[in-house]
Length: 276
Ligand SMILES: [Zn+2]
View 1 (cartoon, rainbow, N blue to C red):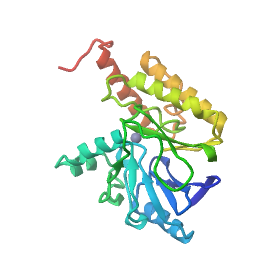
View 2: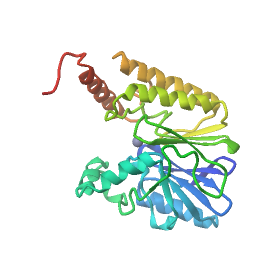
View 3: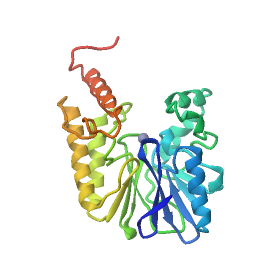
């Protein structure tokens, strides 16, 4: 079911990880961002759109992780975009002959057979080292590219509607998950939070890729919460964070936290151990 969060902006929830697909009303049809996860949910969204007499005229993936790269035949053959870095990352992944097996290993086993993989990642990188906006006939959707969480991650700012699409940042259910393949994962994450902070005052609502939406005060609170978490990670401190505590939405997030701590410790050698 589609739910309006701002004028001309709707979200559609997927059960997996409380994922949010975002739909933006354009002049000739809809922009669809990170469509969703299970086939039945994608079909539901396609039906909602056709019941409303709408077609999808453009797609966008916020970053090159499988749960943001899916598509469904019912959405039609609209061009699908991502940042140049996002598209390059996916292209490299898909050129590996074993990509299907690799991606299959990342899927949650209980729903793996319900996730349609045929159209995964078929996106076009927007030209330029840093594309400024999504090319489509609708309100300007500004791309705020950064390297936190994944290479070529994009947050989207729709200034005239007061909406920020945050991708996999600013979640109330998932901790910041750093791109441990990057040279400076902590610094990348903190820099990205600064970029989001710089626009947070201009919005009425933000939509995280996973979890609940909020207004400007909540956006500022989530930026602070994410920053506090990343600082704790950097300093090998113990974060007091509801997303990994006893009231956490997902119990596996605590394991992700432990893995991130371990990974950073190995990088810096601060726990005295190292893998040979
Ligand atoms: Zn992600």
